[in-house]
Image (tube, one colour):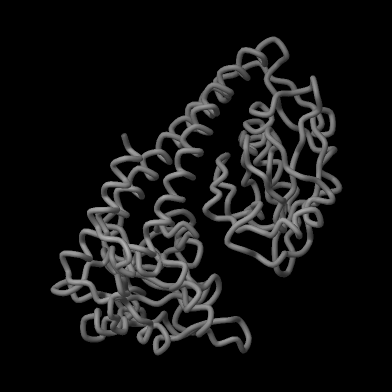
Length: 407
């Protein structure tokens, strides 16, 4: 089947539907408030493509209605990264906010709903071919970036609206199942935290009494689309490891980037620069290298079980220890890694550790189960997406593949 004809992205927008972020002087750090209208920044556009509501900054209603009024985004608008991690995209959700402001590093598209499905455009920008096209057209002077002119001319396969909707339904069904699994994992993690917080008998030990600390590489390899994982600190999400936020490296590079240490099942991965306090448990069956600004704690045999060390790291006392000992640099905040071995960490008393660890391990087994299923679902989505977008596979055939997987 021949590839579908294309039209430039601007043809799918309403009049003046493509806008950029505000001029630098119109939105500065001093404008941020504790609440109000949320600002969509790069961290809200995840590598997986989902719009993330974590770590919002806000501006006042007055600011949003004033100098930022032309930079607003509404539910069903599509937001693209202009500079930074190019290729990121997200659809503005229907809740919990009625409107948003796009930051200086983002651009917004408001589609013509009479001829376009927003989810379809979103999936077009999830296509690896589109991401590669964006990088190929990027302006490389200074920080690589694109502009509204480049974005507006990017080619979009011109499927009829019913086909657009059908494509979005097939791919959306996979993403919906992934989202359900993520909620299952988050619920299990919340239960594990509740188990930990219910313990009233505790002792304080040094980190070095129960674990050995390893540092990750201080550079970044050439990233690839397949091969062993090169983990990112963005993958550390409150105890869970989200591999959609990480990249890959080649088999030839893998020995070099694991020379210091190769993460193994049960290691506690953490960030020591930016995103301080974030941590995750290394799951089974994942072959990976630590990324930049990452370290790991490897439990000492017989001293502590991995899940207990993870939740001790997540506990309020240790999170406060991190805040208290953080070194505030000119560019980034960091943990003084060489001093960390002497930090105190609070653990349940010896008499309750085994029973608590068993309960935590059962919950993390369910987390690992849905994580494995999600990787399979994501692989299936990645296989179907470019074929559906290009017209190389019809929607009925793709639906049959998804139904066969579900059964």
